[in-house]
Image 1 (tube, one colour):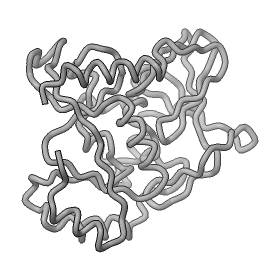
Image 2 (tube, one colour; image 1 turned 60 degrees about the horizontal axis):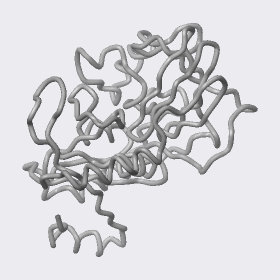
Image 3 (cartoon, one colour; image 1 turned 180 degrees about the vertical axis):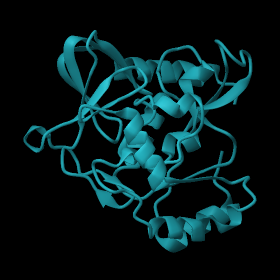
Image 4 (cartoon, one colour; image 1 turned 90 degrees about the vertical axis):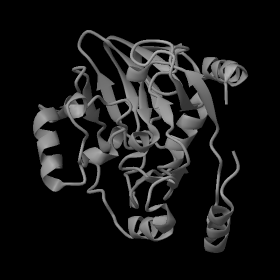
Length: 259
């Protein structure tokens, strides 16, 4: 679907770059809302988008409700999907072009650009929340732009100096001498320490799912998770759904898409 003409002109006048992210239209195949058609970002597009949110300021504008898989399997399951707005929360400005305020998106994005809403590596807003399972996620939406809510988040999740998510996985921030360098990452105009990541583990082993890959971490092992959703192998872990499988699955989805 092409961009609205007015949007293209506004972006061009500001000297911004514009990219179109592909969606497919598929029916829910499992669980709640089976048979309902949904707009899904392709696996590779979702992974690339989330990475881009940490390379510079991004506005995500969408015309129709769109969703992102939190696990790349072939099933289309509501419990393994999040809205595009939730996917980008705390990392980008996002707005539906059907919103009553859509005509003001430029000025709202300007306000967003001029606000630093990240306190550094201890700020929970840097977490990739499509991977980290927050305790309160099933009860109500996170409101971490509020300082008191960030304090409450830490009280709920901090265990012995490490974060523990709802699946009992421990997220330990890597020590400075153990940070493996990658491209610089930013969250809301604040640059994170180069190579900052978490060592993620669980006593009896765990499974880490992203929009594009799935990893199995054995007992005693760990995996490295970055703020931009990148996963790097640690110890006693292995890939059980690789990028190549996501590429093939995206191509299959495109063929059966009813868009």
